[in-house]
Image 1 (tube, rainbow, N blue to C red):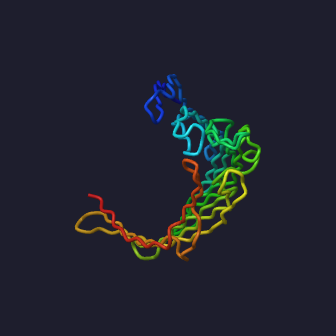
Image 2: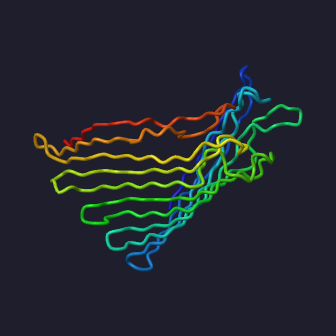
Image 3: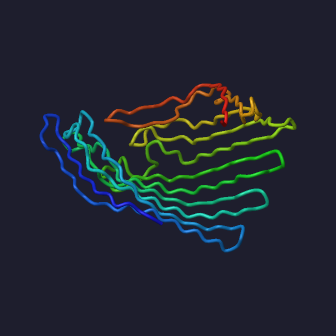
Length: 270
């Protein structure tokens, strides 16, 4: 359990150099966690934290163009359970994250004003499993379902549907298999993301995607130093996909995912 007391003194100016805003405030940012073990192989936990972020900048086409809004406070709450079974750990957690909603609000006269109004609330469930399936095979897997909603923005088109760039479902699987050759292992992985909205109105979607990765790892000693050589290939089937969608200063963006990428690396412990 802990926290930080933050004194914020921020001055914002207009493009001509005149004062636009002076924010002076004290904010306490707590971080707290509680763990309880009813039996040796079961852990129950809960955590709560607050964060402080700089405000956004108004887009060029808004009535308050270039204005920097006041800093915002976010909150995150999580509760979960961990169950150790043989050589595996199974986890389940529910979480909620809340933050102020910043956007270009349409006005009745056809103009826009950049404001902080309402909040975005992400609520989800995440399940995970990690550990040794056999003496040679180790895995790590997780799946998550997320409900992301904007509430109270004052613009009906932005409320009550999945928020921008947040998939409803996502999942990962990583596997590490030790071959019967000392120091040599095969690696594999899979990532999945459901479709997600690419605009605030929820009228444009980018497709879901599944990626596969493979690789190998060889641990040895070179000149008396522990050395690990890795060869990996990400996006094995060269999937074309949109990794992220977003908005910055009033413009919408789509970010392409990386193509098939091979990497060879060496790590030496001196």
